Length: 270
Image (tube, rainbow, N blue to C red):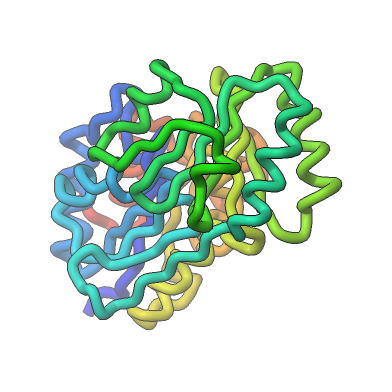
């Protein structure tokens, strides 16, 4: 009897190649892992609507972690649990107000699949309209009534640290914030205490799998907690140094089937 492992996959820069596809080799290895009794799941910063196609492509039947842990659910089992922990709407509006003293391009709030743009934004509309969300444009102080799952502040490189410093000094207790990889000068904000590891642990506990049999792959700073939590926390070859430093191991980059080659060796899937 094979010891079941739970395999958690970040999407961008990890499972996905740079053209946002899953390579045939990686798909085959993940299929083999499932056939041997292992569990495969996705843990991403993306909303469900823009990760669902990969969930279907891999024919998964596990929970999924979205918005970096602010939303975890099981797409095929409504009774599994619906864990949505948004940011308090009052805090969200305080942030919008404070941002008016900085130079920025836009502020976007997402309430699961409803997207609110503070300013009209052709460039970002394209990215966010994936999966047909309901989109509202206009002053967030007026139009945002529900507590957002996540907020994004799109700014200039020279403003990024100033805004982050302000957020740290005023809202440190109630928010988690991180910035997206270059070239995006985007600050992402979710409720304090949330990260991918929180959602991953819910799934691991549900399946009765201890942390030492969790294998997690990631490449960015939103993967830090998950890589730390997993018994096998694996950084991609293309990962940031901060992640490589805390990972148990480093595999090949996302362009070279890093996930597949690591799993083949560890779980003897050759």
